[in-house]
Length: 574
Image 1 (spheres, rainbow, N blue to C red):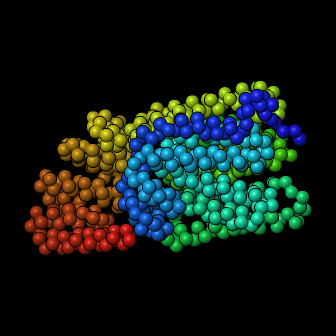
Image 2: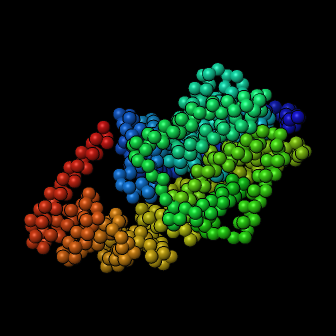
Image 3: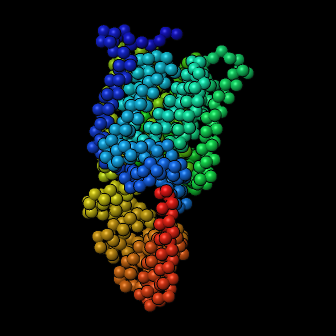
């Protein structure tokens, strides 16, 4: 079978595939280098800026027995969709903290370097699987320039996606060298080690063993079928890694898989195709990307979306049958489907507005870029036409990437840009209102909060956030109105209700409404007896009522809680 070759077209310029990838890496670096001016955003603040644990190498062992956010409450765990156990990623953070402190440009540079490393690995994967260096080079450049990667590279915390991709690709290349090219057993052990590092970088690596199963099932070999079944034994250590990870995670934190926001898993299951449509659109047409997307895109079926789903199935079937003799393309199609599973399963955990995030496509984009590169350089295209088409797509991706990056400059810009795409997103508008507040734009922030209460009048969280902002401005009457609304829509005894009760009681204390404050704090303490300051607020109300014995008892409980908290904090830092 003849191979597609661009070498003759470029021989006079001595433009080899290797050099083209190097030039592409340089151009990608030029686009991403504007990151060094950007701020810590979103989860960068708690995980990096305010994270004392990563400030000393002495704490490295603790990273293997604590989760990413070190969540202390079950409710917090559920809001995150379960415990995020990523010790290798946290070691990466610790290494950056030790080398660069909080000098932000260097954190961005390390993310860019990881992306370049992944780009070169995609090139090597393309050479191995597609066996055409020019096609592999086009795939690497598609990956380097793809605008969907802006979130993963510009958002420092998202480097977890970069790490898992780099480790997984190295693992596969080592496995390929061992199985396909007769490499020594050292390659096999390196592959297992890299797979373990990937598993400890992000949970999506649980799909990696299935990539190897697909490879073993489709790879070209001369073994008989009966004998060929033994080849799957080589994938067993990778499944063992996933199993050990699950056991360790369960021992440390218990088992929590989250729950569908609506409480109906079947309903959430029906939304998975819609999520995949959005991701496919972003992969193939990455020109108006956003940190949040409209909830109706992923939760509302229409005739057009049904047609798109059918077209996706037909296209996948066509490629599968059209290239039945080309195991590499069939393998890449399987890889794309396998790696998309974790991104689709978020429907069982989060609200629709939080189902789609571009960073979840970083690893998935590897086989997608390889498939697209193969189609762009197909033998049926005249060479000049293929070069022109590939160059046009790459140029469009690079320009779009450069345009996309500025929205990650700070929290205000990222949410403002998201609202341009998803103006009805409560999450985006709520975060935008808070960002405006944090940057000192008080009046603009209050306008956003007002709009939120009009958009979602029954949301207790929105009323509480608005009330908190009003209270900080000294507008107690308006704040009390919002807190009262929050309590109205939170009738059950939850941690959130206890928080709002404490905020109401604080206002009542300021107003000398001591009996009301005492009643509210008694309810808060009953709901959350282990929360700091609750007993103290109750003690203040009781003391002003002249009930000194009860006040003294609450004060003792508060002191005991603070001592226990300080002791736990010292232990966690050791």
